[in-house]
Length: 76
Image (cartoon, rainbow, N blue to C red; front, side, top):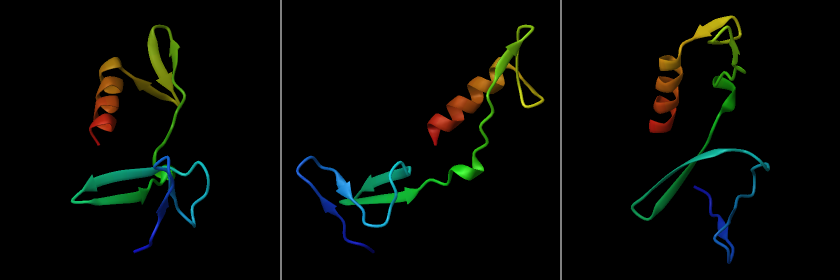
């Protein structure tokens, strides 16, 4: 466990992190748990519309699959 400091603006200073790193936050019972988000396991594909269908990286995507993926990501 590490001790962190908070300034007057409620910003937390962590000694061994780099700028722009992303963390997931869990709060409860007077605790805050920060977990570093590993972005390498999240594939990002730029989608484009071709002939009325969404395609990207040789994968055809339908509207329902896109909506389901967004909802699943928001629920996490």
